[in-house]
Image (cartoon, rainbow, N blue to C red; front, side):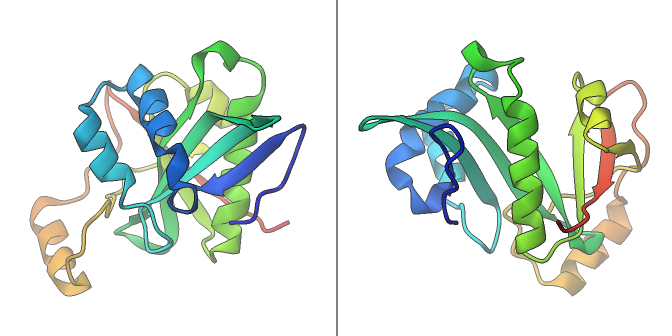
Length: 180
């Protein structure tokens, strides 16, 4: 991914900036606790074949700081859709528009990669995503790091189903992405 400066901000695919992996681990673990080894293993799978980790980085002089992150995975039910598994902004900078910026850049990448729909689930940021154009929808199944052939996956989904509207838990939301 090419970086596009915006007030000293750059966007990268994490797999192209492995030197920033430890900062990304610390950012994610500041909100969602997980062992460092498990987090490193998960982030090391970042690729254009998915899952894909995107990072927002500020640069002042020679110092770079990971300010935010989003992670995209494939969706089982829709070949043209991706699931935003996580979005996070460094705590000290929350409420300053960086979450919106991360989502806008994530949407641009989704379009560049040839996808047209984004899904996500949220427990506490429904209004934020609603203002970004997301609307409530049925739950979907993330392929995550799944490498099953499509026919086997379809068989499993047929056995177990994909969920449906959530009740009392996370809210599933969907947005059709319009290329700029």
